[in-house]
Length: 554
Image (cartoon, rainbow, N blue to C red):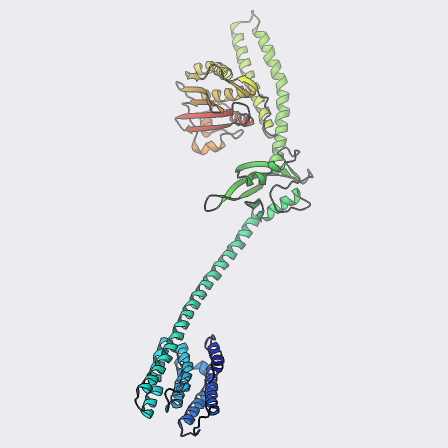
């Protein structure tokens, strides 16, 4: 048998052995073919032998034909696995018959195929069966026939040992393959299950996102739209009737809170969010037609990766059209009524002052006129607050910054509030520099100080304290108004600067007010590029801190 023929046979047998379900008749056919080729080659090589049923070669052929017939006829798919081990055992017996008169003959190499077969079939047990069968069916018959010589003994024992080693090798390999296959199938099953869960969660998430009445957008770090729900696609059709490229900052029919001023790229909520800014209630209008345009309140939050680096942003667009239109109607009404009230109030105040200038009024009339003037002033302040409240919804309050002595403004406000503090036995103090020049709107800032100081006095019980401090903190001026009043509940602080809202404690104690002062104060402070903060505890008082830039630039 030539090396080329052996390599071809090895490839054929190996391919059959590696099959997922090797068929016994195919393996047996390969062995029979190799055996026939071996006999033919021995004949061509000049070896003479008698091919009869009584000769060892003839018996080998008979055994091989028997094994081939069994392989072709028996229903191996319905028999247990170990039953098919009969075929490779018969093949080993055939190899023993071929080599009975010469244990060193090349035909002994045929034992490798049944050895592989047993290893493939029975695993490590197959290697043991191969060793025993090789010694009993190949080694012992040849030794009994040709005698016990060192050469014959070596051949009779080494051939079964090599066959057993080959069987063990293929058994180990297939065991590893089987383990890897099981692990792969296990991982594949886990992956399939995970993918099913992910796909189910994706469908659920999509259904939830499309069912909410809020537009939702997810941006990546480059500003590309990663996800958009159905509600926001409706808004985008209004803002971009010619289509949207799916990137942040595109200009379209997007307007500011007034519904008229078109937003620049830097003002677009998506661009602000892409720069890492987080915000709430950024109001915009989308749509060119006033009849179909919508007002949106936009909120944004940064998305960060596991290392805390910026990875994108999530934005929510809430439709507040009805609310904005109702506010516009309300503000128009408030503005109209406030203007109508200012004229008669001015007359009341003017004529009251003229009456007080007279020297012939009785004392009780003077006291009554003082009451009229005091209530007229209160009503006038309320009208002014209502007008300011209407202005807030039309955008930031316009401020006219000029060089102003803030120390003088605060000092005058504290002095003006001193009579009210004295009347209620409240200790009112002021600490600050003699002069502090900053760029502010004098009237607006005076309104801030008046509101904070008057609130502190109003919400502080008799014999309490109100401390006003003015100081410079770096590039900003800090105004602090601290009191020992009733304080503010933690649950109420988020709504403290909401218009027309009053705390539960203020209502329970019947403290006068309509809830506009702090809302207007916050708007004025923010219009100066500053911010206002509050620390408070029920029963221990409140501290308001206002910080505005010294140079007037926020």
